[in-house]
Length: 170
Image (cartoon, rainbow, N blue to C red; front, side, top):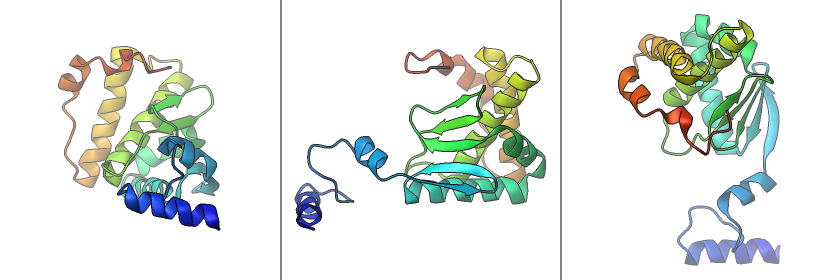
């Protein structure tokens, strides 16, 4: 009880939105209080506000884009908050960096995008690099079009070669 009160006081004096124990990085505090549960057959792991956004995104895909939902349902076994974002194609685990700034519709597009990485991997097709990213962004845009969300400029994004970033493991 005393630790909780002190953590709350520290949060207030440090102008934090949520109480955190001083000296603990936000992602370390999150890891200690994660929850894990099944939603629409997919295991979700993370904090309540992050999991809520993921559930909203899954509902949007399920109700508004049944074709891409089939790819999500087949290929994503687990979604967890574990930056950087990426898909483990061999296991079906999607690590997300979804945060407060991302709209749940954008998160839905990321889920669709990464589900298709695994689908192409399982089909023994190109699933990574420029060609793989282009194919997955086309599926992402297909989803965005169906829900009335702004499309991504695929060529402009491909020019950044973001998949070659050093903090990427895939």
